[in-house]
Image (cartoon, rainbow, N blue to C red; front, side, top):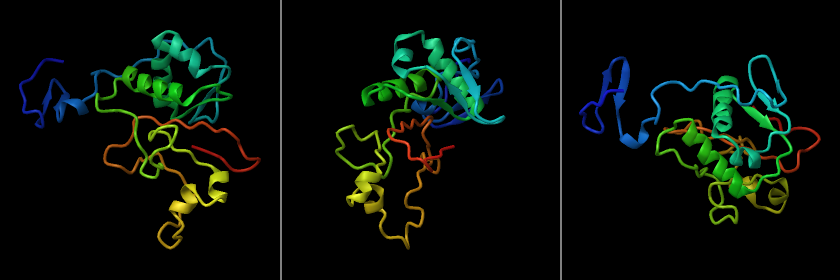
Length: 189
């Protein structure tokens, strides 16, 4: 993309490309990412015809050590399929954070993209403010979302979870790790 002298908050169109806004809010790439095929050797299945892909045996811990093309191809797959499922993960909260930071960087997200702190995350969590723990056990003891949203007249949606897509600048990606899946419920998408 040619360099253009603009006020950092001014937006202009150059050769069909929008340039402007705050520099840290601009993507680091100018063209869409393309799938390279690096994940083709991993067992995979589409969850529905239109949305979701599940990879079997693909560990986040391994992705952090392997070729960055695999993480970038996973970002392309999320863009194309809306969501990916990586079951039976042996991953720590630190590795989850590192993976999300690498995913956003390799996907060309703006420099301002960082780990988001959900508005309902309890401050001072031992996992850090960027990880929101949803626990039925904690709620039974009077903590968690049930405690925070106990005024049913104001918060009829207590128990529902949103990946902050309603915010002015929503997160680029969200990650959910289910520790204990109930026999019923727990559906996501």
